[in-house]
Each structure stands twice: as C-alpha cells, then as structure tokens.
Length: 300
Image (cartoon, rainbow, N blue to C red):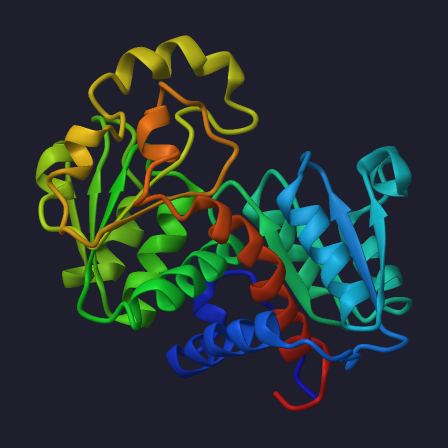
C-alpha cells in the first residue's frame, strides 16, 4: 500500500482538504470517547521549539487513544551524525507515523522518502501546512466556505504565506500578498498560483474588501539576528485598526502566534472583535486529530 505523507497542502486533493476541514469540526463537537488510534504511536522529531504544534499533536494522539514519543535533536542519534535516511528507516519500523518540525524543507522530504509510515510536516522553512489547515477550519466555522473570497496576507512572504498560496489554489480563493520589497514568497510558487495570487507592496490595497486578513511575526525562528533589519523594512506593514477598516465589514483577523503586539499587529486588533486567533490556536488540536485519523487509519 502506498504511504500517504502530508508535507504540503498539495499532498491532499481539494476534496480531501475539504473533508479534513469538515472532519476537524466534527471531532471538535464530539463528546463521547473515540479511540480509532488505540495502540498507535506517533514519533515526533522537533529541531525547533514549539508550543502549539507539540501540544496539539501529543494531546490529539492521547484523545484518539494513541500515544506520542517526543524527540529533540539531543534525544536521538541525529545530533551525533546518524544519517537522516537511517533514522527514517529505523524509526518508521517502530512507530505508526512521524511528525517532523525542522529547519530545512529538504529534511522532511528526504525523511519521507525513506519512511514506511506517514510523515507530517510540523513546520519547515518553506511550508507550515498544519497551521493553515487549522486556519481554514476556523474560517469555515465562522464564515462558511472560503471559495471565491478575498484573503489578505500582510507581512513576510514566509512559510505560512507559502502554504496560504497552496490553500488558495486548493480551496479556490484569491490571496493578496503585501510585503516589503525583498521579502516576497518564492517566485515559482507565485507563478504556480496564477490568478489565485496578487502580489504587491501595499497593505492598504491588499486589505481593501478582504474577507480575511492574516499576518505573522516579522522575524521567524532562526532569523533573530535579522530583527533590527526586518523591523526597519516592515515599517508600515503592521495590521492596525486602520488596515482592518479597509476590509469587508465581516472580515476576520488571524495570526498563527506567538504574536508581537505593536509590531506585525496592534494589540487593539489582536484582542479585538474581528480576531479569531484563540479559536485558530485551539483548532490546531482538532485539525491535527482529523489529519492523524486520516493518515493513520486504513480508510484513505
């Protein structure tokens, strides 16, 4: 049987993506015990620190009847030079799925190539599909299907932005990206998105009429040494009440967290009535439970 991985949103068909969004909301509403992953074990290799990704996957496995084993680089032989391919071969004979949260996207691709079990991208430098899956669940729960809507991404053209580019294609919405010159997403990903993507350097234009406005920190993990340079470059790209006022009246605001109030978003917007960031954070748990059920049971 072919092993299914989840390295980017394009590893799912549009129909499968919509199924997972619906299933995540169903699992969220479920009150009675449900343990489809009884005796299943998830291996978790994290090169980067995490709050939401780690807790949501570990809690999700427990709630579905399974267990999770967490490994930092210090807890495995990877930190002592064991080839990634060897770790993939060995670990995938002992667990039923693996989550990798790593610096380089190539790492998760190489690991998946040698794994006997499903591999999930818990974050790389290029993509963060698990977060965007939760974001889409949140939008669907508050506003219904996102097809045909306008989404504004304001800030760095980072891994989150690039997963939003894939979501726009899969779920048929228009993504307007506003970022400073030099901080755009990968040109090839913009080309692949075609009419689903509009790139500019003007936050006001991107926000105008938007149904959803999304941002992220200006300096991601590993870019701390660029903080001062990025802070200067991103002046004018803060999501403020003035920016939100350009959006549609029922527009939502999202941020994958952690947030830096007063930098990429004002405290007024983050804590305001259009913000759904706490629902969005909680939905990491439910979206990942749906993903785990999908990948670790035989139905797919």
